[in-house]
Length: 136
Image (cartoon, rainbow, N blue to C red; front, top):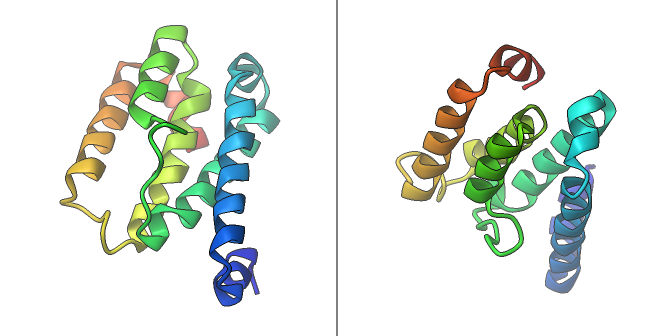
């Protein structure tokens, strides 16, 4: 049994909100130190794992991401400007993996299409795309 299935079986909405909030907090802390994530693969791995977890907690269960907590478009734009796409692109990719299990966020959902367009545009503009693509 996975932790996610345990949360679902417990059916405690307050606990689920607390877990999602804690995930956002952990991501926010790690995103404040993106310079380390660009240098160290272990930091990027933690970011990707948290991104996957967030996607499973939210998008895969037909629940939206809170843009006030984590704005993917702004995150991609800032990372592009600061040269930190090698850390942010894999994170966004893992978050968006949750769309595959969703009934609401599957294509042709406008929110998903917009985020994928931002993802695709930033990936091809990044000079280090070959390295980033291997990590994803």
